[in-house]
Length: 306
Image 1: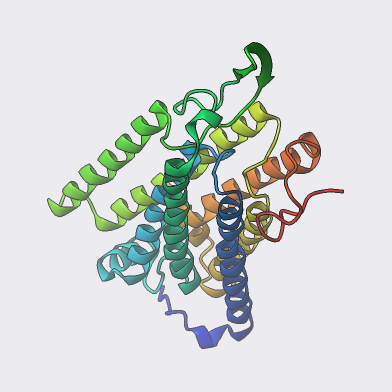
Image 2: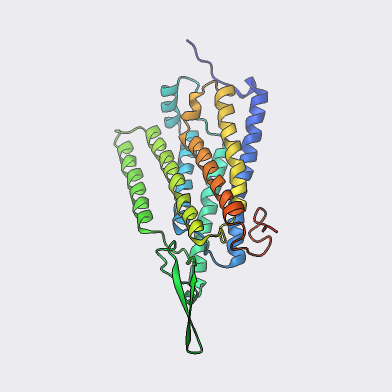
């Protein structure tokens, strides 16, 4: 059976919908990074942020960038994909995917830079507990005119380095990508398989990176320091990204398998959606009265409740 190449002109309406979803999700997901940058800048500290989240985020978006740009631009990877899925079928990667992945990597790296910068300027005497264990509650003892007053406080320390399990995970992910890259160079592993491995690394990171932040919020009984504005935008972007993938695969390429064949985009949409809902519950239900900061701090989406 002859398989015809899909042309953009064959589906003007659906291409218009896909383009709209791509632009809208790029704007929503891209803007989602800025409330945290603004919040960090205004507070001049990054307490309340999980160090594991901050360190895993740039690596995850680096993996997403490698997958998106490799699947879109590499003629070798595209030929291998075509051999597996039929002539005329290519990875469902859009230009908005390319723009978002690179932008997300750069901004998440800048956020990590904020952590390093503000940790150098922070007054260490104001930080209670161990840096490497920001999730545990610690007792704070204050000297006042020779009289010791005991006060219990859950305080987030300045997140300057990830936990030991996170460091081990980072090393393992780098090693897996490096070893598989060598196998590709030796001709024992296809480039497309390496890109799939990289996309799987992104999914693994997206699965685990939010967990320390969820736990930290629970330990502190507060979401102070974690910009909720990024979650609202991320939620919108997740829905639009998934919609773009489904429409492009089903109504344009007529290849529903293309949805599953883009594990990075599919998995990222669902994982982001799941954790976004968890953070929203923490912010507006569980801890809605805890850790309130100045109104409007952190950009749109971070306004405090009345």
